Length: 459
Image 1 (cartoon, rainbow, N blue to C red):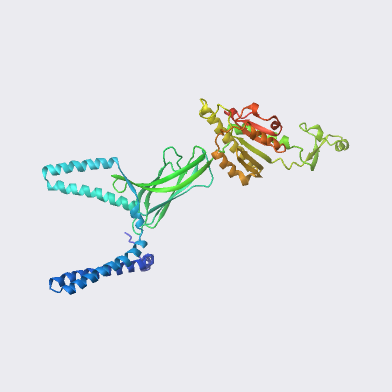
Image 2: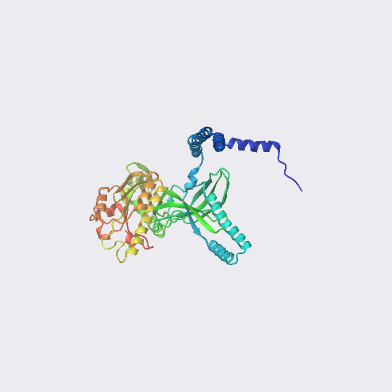
């Protein structure tokens, strides 16, 4: 059988580390105050003895000196020690909840108490005392486990709906000498509000002056704002009779962007959008790029007749198309009268509106991946033309909070777009077909939100 041998150097190192970790001024102040109180106690005892032996003046002087010394310790020593001690742990608000095991245990205690009172058996009284002591010990130990524990939660900066993300929950035990056991962190939010932490996170052990973190997967089912009012740190340690919860207030708020994973509508619309975009900008450049062979898809106005005569074959001029990566993405949140979410078909209208928001986010993300120049317009919001990578998260944030507009402007929002005939526009609108200005059709691809039912948009 082998036996571990502790080196003297190791012991010295452990003692040195313990000594370095001590708050030496606080301990000196503590022992100084204890000594002062001991002297005050001795003077108080001596004053009593002086009164008994018939020396009242000496007794009164000793009593006054003892009181003055005690007051001096209370004014000069106790406040600095209190500032160095984490007394804030004593102010934690802890909620109690009886568990099923606790109910069974308390029922047994009551039965034994009735039996002890009826029989007067000393053994039953001893057993009853032990059982009650177990309840007291459980309460004290669980309170110690919850005190001195701080919590921190970190989530990614950018979060998308229906897309799993990994968050980190960290607990730090700030107690100087005692560990914590069996802690569980859960989210607490008012009813009806979006909650961030939806599943408990368990920490089996937390050593003194140590921190531990757990990774947790989060999924947010919808776009918009999520808020966590507070977290609850819970424990049933040591016996499971009581569940104690310490509430930790949290100002955490998250913005969840719309889903950007391609849908069927996106895959059906993208080739059409790409074709419209290419045909809109084809030949609009002014610098000659090259002369190439004629293709069946080329227009006759691009044929270079001189080059064709020299070569004996049709040749076409190809111009530089410096603007073909510029696009204006427009989301029109106006709905026609009678199609609001409170109408009989409100659920269907709400689903179509969410499909439109998601499709707009997918298109914005697509142009971001292509490193395109993009401008974004929405009700009372404009993001000027810029590289998509610079404005993509502003666009997604705007789409995260967009709601159907109720203040009608008789199509003025779309009519304002006709002033930009030189820019190709992708417009997602909830308005009916007949309300679209005619001049927009030549420079736009229009998606009607009412048509988004898994079949794609129509132009």
